[in-house]
Length: 400
Image 1 (cartoon, rainbow, N blue to C red):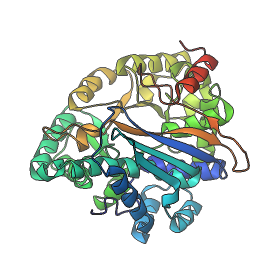
Image 2: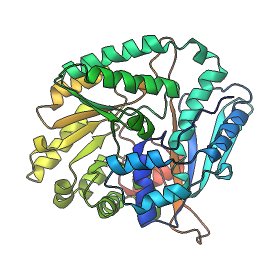
Image 3: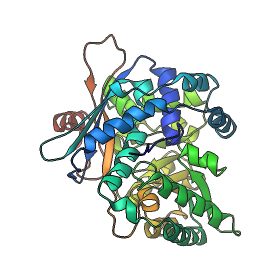
């Protein structure tokens, strides 16, 4: 089987920025992650073994000087010491356990130092997605020339509508070549003539380097969820915002607010934070309802929401992004992170619905126990974590 991940920075930028914040604030923290397939997919026989071999291959993947030079140039908010850490970083197969049950369902568990294991999630998800299509024979039928043209058609529509958008599609892409094709097509279309909209870049650091684009990203839910496990969900957002601004000195000022729902975040989102952070990211719930909650919150603090950037990234496609753009532009500065619709939209092929979520954390390896955590989505039925933990967190936050 070919090696699927061949570049250290073939990963989302937010994994690197969070890794930096973790080392800065929680250098001894330990965590556990678990894999969830929301479609309950039956994987081909031997899939777990092939996945184990791909994870073992990651041990040969190290960061290059070119990758470091690019990140230093494009990500000047990352402190210099972090690159010394990355130079010495090595993946290790012992952090990951994979197996299939008697029904063919896939199980993946990750455990270890937070600073180490944080760089596994996106890579493993990308491996699982591409490996599934290889082992089921679907990858043989992918027409990348046609996909380039299909992507250009999407780009034309988004740019003509005035959308400001990025590629967020690494985790559930059909293949590395699929995302490479998307980024190349998007850049070619954007640079072909002046547009009302803008293709900003990609979350994939390696492809941003390859095509001289801006790597895009800030944080994921796991940063807030881990803090919620260690300290409780009531003040997790407050603690996370404080630590984030201290590590990055006000840069990377888009906060992902929905780890434990809007209501508790809103209570934590004081005027100083609202002024400090340049905007918020909507990643669950109804996009229009969430937007208006944000708008009203800013207005209640005496802040004009039109001065704030709202990033929409919740299961978007071209059509939904354009509709949101037409509505949201009167209330804020909208932008879009579009993932699976860009990198896994081949005719006749169903994208995978897979996630890896942090489920437990402890602040130091000397503790004999972990604190469980979960994610309380604004989407009904998409809470992630042990049902008992979800209930306990919802009770603590007085959620129904």
